[in-house]
Length: 144
Image 1 (cartoon, rainbow, N blue to C red):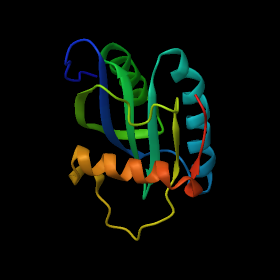
Image 2 (image 1 turned 180 degrees about the vertical axis):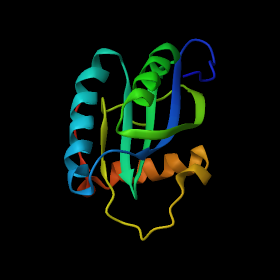
Image 3 (image 1 turned 135 degrees about the vertical axis):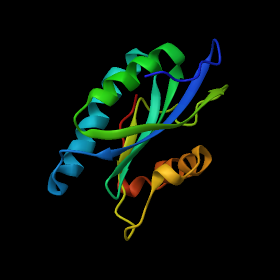
Image 4 (image 1 turned 90 degrees about the vertical axis):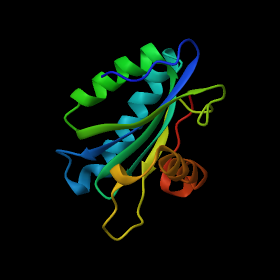
């Protein structure tokens, strides 16, 4: 998957995808499995991030080198648990927003339908992810 390259240094990418092929009763376990596997894999690649499953969507921010993010997005796009993956934004960063975790995330239990993350800006989605990171009670934490 092609994303804008701002040269050397850190990049942040935020994407949205639809949850696919995961029965609702398995979603908590699948999200936990994704976070656990990502925590292990990301540490070795200097990747950090935050993942939230909300109302049938995955929202994720990933931070790392352009090359590593591009390869990871290709893997995520090929993952059958994701459908209609759309990169909402890419930006160069000097500081990680989720630098304390190889991956952190969880499943949001709020909402009542009508949620369309594809219509939100990168800043809006980062706000959701930051609040989710702080709200630890609905998140599964994994240290890098």
